[in-house]
Length: 41
Image (cartoon, rainbow, N blue to C red):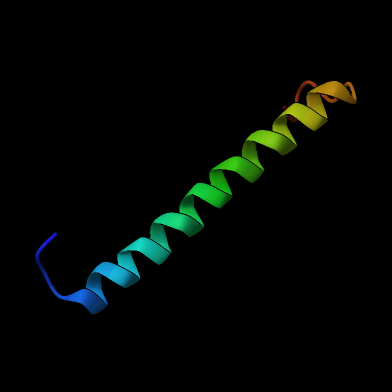
């Protein structure tokens, strides 16, 4: 990919953080549903 390497690196870091957050939200939703807190899940 052509472009400013610093910008590409920063965007890659932001993408990794967003994917981590999505994964955490998904896991916490499944955990709360499993515990019976359906309104929170």
